[in-house]
Image (cartoon, rainbow, N blue to C red; front, top):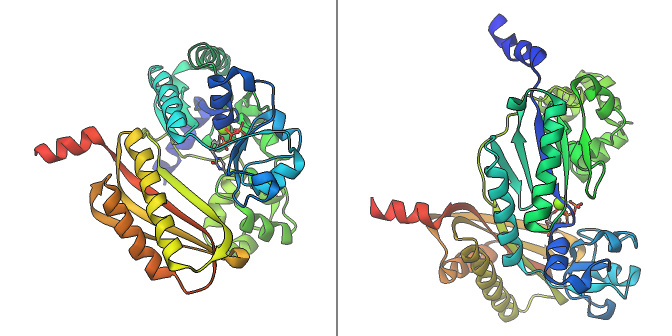
Length: 367
Ligand code: DCP
Ligand code: MG
């Protein structure tokens, strides 16, 4: 019994200090770095807006574009209506992968446990620094190093838990540094929208809203039995996280977790030739990204969005790591055949995941 309490006791005497760093408007900032004439302008990265007739989505946009209400994942046609004079650019994924690798190299060189969670964000466990003031000083230095070496800005959150650090890094974007000391943890979390908790998506958010739960504090005070009846045993962990209890550790793994490409058709289609040609183009495109990042993958996922936005995905794990477009094409065609039900398709996408580096693969081959 007592053994199980040990981590809490340790945590109580010497709190962990977790740093979460997230780059500001990442793809857009990298583009603005490469093309100084874009600085200060509304820049939107994503599908071609085609004078408002384009059908894809916004990947991201500069903060100048956000002032017009443009956001990630918004239809590009809507972005065009909000700010027709914005600079619209297609994503240059290899450029972003390179900037990401440069960023992670800087973070790795700091010598703390590092967990990369996406192309532009990472956790560092900086508990060794001992105090929050020391960690704050370190965070300021990291921001300066990134600005000097990469000419990019980032936002940082420091907190005793991963969840709180991640929420904190988002509070004062862009360029923010938000410190949540242990004594402020509960009051920091309390007024936040439940959606801020990683893992709570739109669907769970709606369900929680229906139960009258809007803020993290609402979640903390809600009857746990009712929560369990609705969400199962995971409700216990959820309520703990809301209360500031989050034992998850910074896991040392790095690298991009997936690369994907998707295409929205100009008109919904079930033309099998067009679908096949699109799969080929998407497969070639993602494989190019994979090779730019010196990676091989094992899992291929095909995403189909039908008219009316019903979306289906299917994944297959290959027997070997590959970067060969022909293999990815074959697998993607077969997955599409499995899920295609004859309805008109709005969007097709391919995602590659379960990566290995080329070095690791070569090592495997030598064995
Ligand atoms: N991204 C994307 N599609 C999305 C969300 C993000 O392609 N729906 C890409 C583009 C972003 C990058 O991932 O630049 C990082 O995502 P973030 O959520 O961190 O967004 P940004 O870095 O662009 O902006 P922020 O300053 O809010 O972090
Ligand atoms: Mg970011």
